[in-house]
Image (cartoon, rainbow, N blue to C red; front, side, top):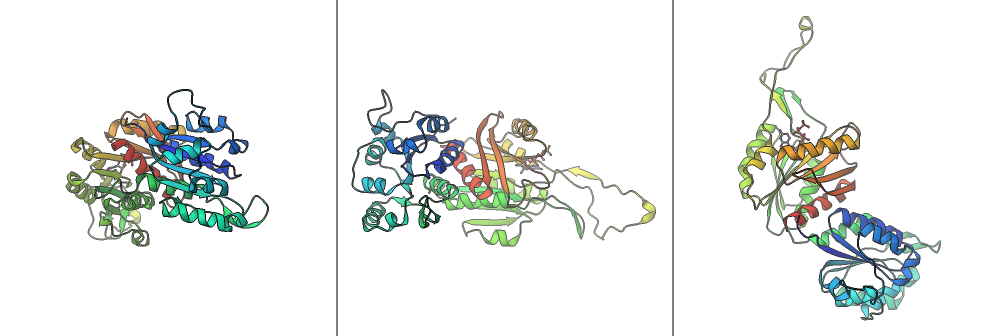
Length: 403
Ligand code: CTP
């Protein structure tokens, strides 16, 4: 597996520090080498043991703490991006003025990578002229901000000053980490559920809405890729929400998707096959509507297997191409994972994203749980949350596997 990219998460002394635990967890699950650097005062809010357990790395808050190896210069040099959450008024002031009196401020001063700040403070402090000027200085130097947002503050007041929601912080951070990394790359994504026609009005289909694949296509496009989306029966309003960086080709049946996928794949750097493809299609298509005749009693359909698109792509894949598929499984989570691992070993894709589906889970705009495994079925990532958020993590994980 490729070397994990390092991200630094600075934690200031605000009550919102507990929210940052979720951010650290998400970054680790997305495959990043996360290093948490709390300010000494913030350790009263969330302690060193928690950060160490979540990140899997040592936690230093003072410059003289590392006994060997990773000092502030090395931490700074190898960082792909730094997040500070919560960023207190005091921290913003110190960063803006180059004051380096603890590990975090030293690392930030020594680093040359993107910096994302998630401020959290009382409204009066946020609106104070000193803070406004510090924010201005930091923006001019290229720092990015997420939040603060309006809501209940720890003082009991209402107003602007709450730290942005974890999901927003995570997606901004992943966006920074991956922005431009897919520039001008060709990526193919399949989405939706195929429909296999029986007669002019009926088909065999499935419940897939195409939401997951659409979100994955959107993330690739946001990060600069030219995306071709093979769309199987996706709601037009959902497709209309995509930018012009996504070329949509309608592939309503398994056979159509198979033909287009095989034709386009040689031009692609990466393909993510997220569509729910029918495993069988009717042997015969009746050109007239099939009539119900009571005397016939039971009615049987003759079906034949469709081609396995993912497996066919895997067989044609070159070393410089990356192929990912999904394993949509039902049952308990343990069963789902077990079936997904077996599928990963069978299909030959570089990654399989295992997810649980059922009548009320997995399809449409719901929260989802996904485990990523490699060709041998070994876990390489795990995500949970809204599909938009997981889509960003999926694209980030694929990037990591390639680079
Ligand atoms: N897939 C495909 N062509 C098919 C069936 C599935 O390319 N004819 C792809 C899907 O897009 C997905 C992966 O294979 O990326 C797994 O799909 P899934 O429906 O979970 O598995 P199946 O291969 O259909 O296996 P099973 O029916 O045993 O679950």
